[in-house]
Image (cartoon, rainbow, N blue to C red):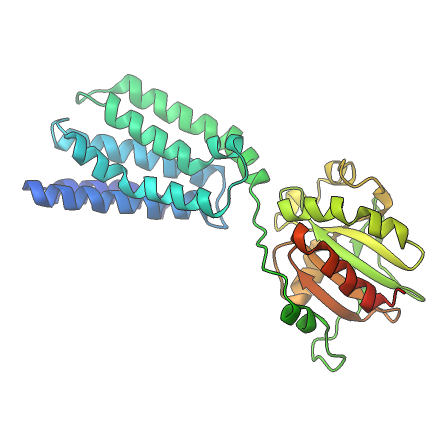
Length: 324
């Protein structure tokens, strides 16, 4: 993958420089480079397999590619040429943040925003054929961000989607007992607050598993909104907050998971060992509300949470577990 990224980084700017011959073609090829930035950043900073190293390659591509193009054009890019080059990253940043706005501090740590900033600095500071100082500064900054700040951004990046809660969806959440994929709760292993590996045997009561992740905004809302409902009915059905994360090293950070401040009852926290339950269900994202009957059979599941639909969800859960 690293070799492919390196070829991508060097090949596209070099090809564009070779093809530039007239003014209109210049603008078109600058726009092509702008598109390549978005594609490159999507692969190195946004894709599921992203990491600190790929993030650095994505930022370095913007820095080096900008320098190569500026050098071949004798550092005489006009204002509108620069705007053409910045166009697609600007649109990409706008669309990505408008779809999911988490907060201003999160926005400032966004790798697309960082890449756009470095691209802009390069367009301003690269003024001669030997801009060693600005290149060194930008590459050093890119390395610092990638290996020290990018992991923090990635940690708080919410991947949960929230679908509208509707009466139709509610009916579909009640699983047919004849469903071919039979999920039995006791077949799965979890890690509890004592760091023991356990399985759950409902026996005489229903069990509700609410999946969560500290980066998931809807999860945090549901944990707070439903706490009173869970406490009032703790003798009627069992509730556990099941931690999910696709990254094993984060999923095994038990100290942080079991000290999570928004969940006061620590013995309700479980970790899905190896994400076996999620894999068996073929699902991803959070929060999921999964209810198992006293025989341990999965009888209900609902995905997503909206505070405005709190009462509807509580009613659904109450109906399934048989509350008066």
